[in-house]
Amino acid sequence: MPITEDQVLARTAWVGASDVPAIVTGKGVYDLWLLKTRKVSPTFAGNEAMDLGIMIEPALMDWAEAQLGPMHKDADGRRDVHVKHPTLPMEANLDGQLIEKEESVDAKTTGLIWRQWTVDITMQWGEDGTSEVPDKVIFQGHAQMMCIPVRTEQMHVAALIGGRGRVLYHVPRVKVIEDGIAAAVDHFWTKHVQRDIPPENSAPSWDYARQLPRNAGEVLEIDDANLITEYRDASEIVRLGAEAEKRKKELKEWLVAVAGSAEYVWADGVAGAVRIYKKNVKAEEKPRPARIDTIVQYVDKIKRAEQKG
Image (tube, rainbow, N blue to C red):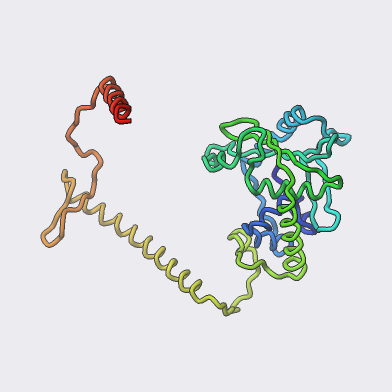
């Protein structure tokens, strides 16, 4: 489930399991480096999807426990378990941990808000009972398994997916993934965090980049002149585009006014007429086929296709 702002601040001393996807894939790794070296403060505003996830987690974990068996709980009934890797600077907060086999259980919610629901989201999640989950969940799950003191061979994901409902996944432990995570985390921490060297081939997001301190008047020479050239060209296009859109609107208002009832305007010396306004244009009405005629045509089409087959 989503971590809190306090957890983000506390984790500057180590890599969390949810940090691992950024380290392995490189997506967002510069922001992660800025946070771990405390060059920026976390931009943690939260959103409705996150709030819903936090609210739903207890009920989702109740359902997971009913499917998988009893989980560890503290005196207050909370299932959260914190575990540490024995050698790597990596730790994990487990949403739950089974008593019998010590396997971790992670709660996930996705696609609960309509504007965030897409086919891409649902396609990343496979059928119930499989291990088909998004890559970032696989990387996070392996990091969790690596931190559990007792070796476990799989972890479980209880997911609530918009448009589908509750689904349970079982992710097996894969040595190649585990070794890759160990190497990536060690490299990120020793080379980039401890030596204060930013990650290669990455850049900060705007939210974090604007937090970085600037020295007034300082000019830095960079190797890639194309970056500066493309930025200037893009800025000019945006400026001209804004000015052109404003002028187009002014001219259109004049043309609409002088056109009267005409849909098009034309002038001597101009190639072709310009359509300036199509709203309220009286078009020729075409008869619409009756619904029964449409169905008959559709059936005839299918029959013809079958005969050809």
